[in-house]
Length: 138
Image (cartoon, rainbow, N blue to C red; front, side, top):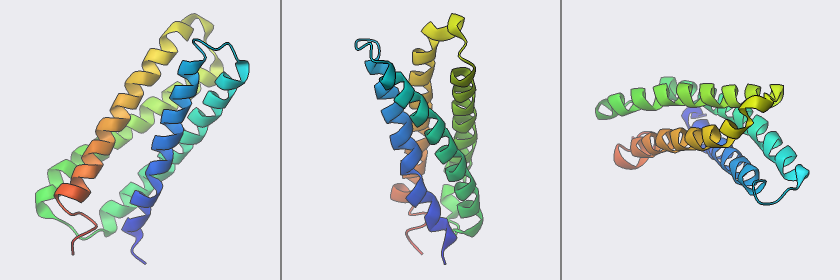
């Protein structure tokens, strides 16, 4: 089995979960429906777990994918960004879990910045596949 294919399969789950969670949390600003925030929290936790699994699969992919020397620098950036992205979402998950009320006004902007970091990480992953052909061209 080509284990490096597991990372691109799994990578869309944390992106979808974390972005949908953010959208639900953002909707609580105008709609005072407690279930929206509860659902957003669940998606944050699940998305963070999915990001951890995806990072692990990315590390496995790095070891098993046919190497493309020109892509090495972008691959290293993607890996570093992946660790930072996971760290930020773990931080946000802990923040939400411990419900620091005095920091509540900063939570949504922090989640927005985390989404930007997630998109930058995804962009680098896209470069690896669509520009350098990593995992696609043999």
